[in-house]
Amino acid sequence: MKRVLISRILPDEVYAALSSFDVVRRDRTQPLAADEMRDALRDFDVVMPTLGDRFSADVFDDVPNPRCRLLANFGVGYNHIDVDAAKAAGITITNTPGAVTDATADIAMTLMLVSARRAGEGERLVRSGNWEGWHPTQMLGLHLSGKAVGIVGMGRIGEAIARRCHFGFGMSVAYHSRTRKELTFDARYHNDIVALAGEVDVLVVAVPGGPQTHHLINADVLAAMRQHARLINIARGDVVSQTALIDALKASSIGGAGLDVYEFEPEVPESLRALDNVVLLPHLGTATREVRVDMGLMVVRNIQAFLNDETPPNVV
Ligand code: NAP
Image (cartoon, rainbow, N blue to C red; front, side):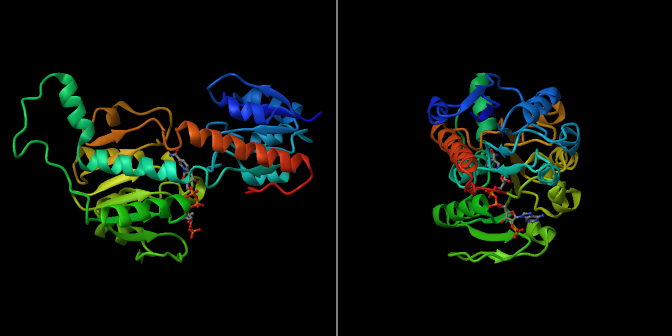
């Protein structure tokens, strides 16, 4: 019987769907340690890794002729896996695109609204017991309806965010990707992120992580943003230079930021936590029960197809 390692606690529906395999459930919430990753490649036919499991080239180098043939990633983002090294070791990688799209777009909207309307600050004020009551100039934020959003990475999630902004909030949409997209609503393409950053009220980051997008949002991009504009990152932490962002927030050269992900996650520096003009979420993009079940069942379909000698639906 094929051996499958499930590296995290998952909803019960997912374990039920895996019942025809010899499954080892790792009942921990922390990422796999270096030794666990090497053992996983040696001892299992299929491994389900996820965010934080750093399958870097040296892990594959240390396990020549691995038993593992499939890394069935739980999540659409797989920048924690060295894809070239995995492929060189003869290992297929799959992910879970689509299942995550709407939930992650919703978290982007949450961050946009909480940042623009200063809802985090407001909640802290009420909880502090120091609120002195409504007045016409209390905690004035940024009106989102009718404003301009800039999407960096017009893929599945970027487009879902753009649709929400355009159809829900009457916002104009501009975007940057390496290629122009065919869209069913008006959206202006920008080849240059700095130019895009300079003309929008909210800049949303929705590109994959990895070496190609590392610090795509750097000090130059932040310097181009308008003083009231918000930066929202629901992609991966290292797409944004955290140091440059903290400098911009401290100097109030941008209006604020909303972050679901962090450069050195789960570490969030005190210098960021101390700032009132940033909204900080603990990587909640896909954190709904329905979505985590859907992601898990997508992992199961990839595993089933692979072990039946079929091409899995979501090979990367
Ligand atoms: P996707 O459909 O592949 O979209 C990514 C888009 O980014 C593509 O349209 C691509 O267009 C663009 N892109 C890629 N590299 C680029 C570069 N170097 N410069 C500019 N644009 C680039 O992926 P998705 O499903 O929307 O997911 C996007 C990412 O969101 C995932 O990879 C994941 O890291 C993150 N995510 C986060 C959460 C969370 O919990 N916060 C949840 C789900 C996903 P071009 O090829 O034309 O450039």
